[in-house]
Amino acid sequence: QVQVVESGGGLVQAGGSLRLSCVASGSIFRVNIMGWYRQPPGKQRELVADIREDGNTAYADSVKGRFTISRDNAKNTVYLQMNTLKPEDTAVYYCYTAVRRIMQGPSYAYWGQGTQVTVSS
Figure (cartoon, one colour):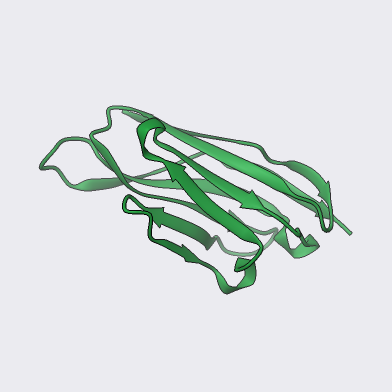
């Protein structure tokens, strides 16, 4: 089995910063993709940013220039540094991982439970 655990959410004022962390553990051969999605109140889940094993990244337009995703492959950990936060960034943030459990096996998606980020105006 694979466990995905997020941390670092909380309440912050507009213009402030937060750093989210996510660790994948368990039966893992390789973590191909790690990323963050978010679900604002009453809206659908959306991609925030993701990062591949080779370091290539992708960001939603709404967070470019404010958020930075990074990962530590040795620790199967991904980080999301969020700066200049806005009230519209308020959401539950979910960590996503695409994990290969054996060398020649397929990748499977695993999700964390989510962490609340609330930005007050």
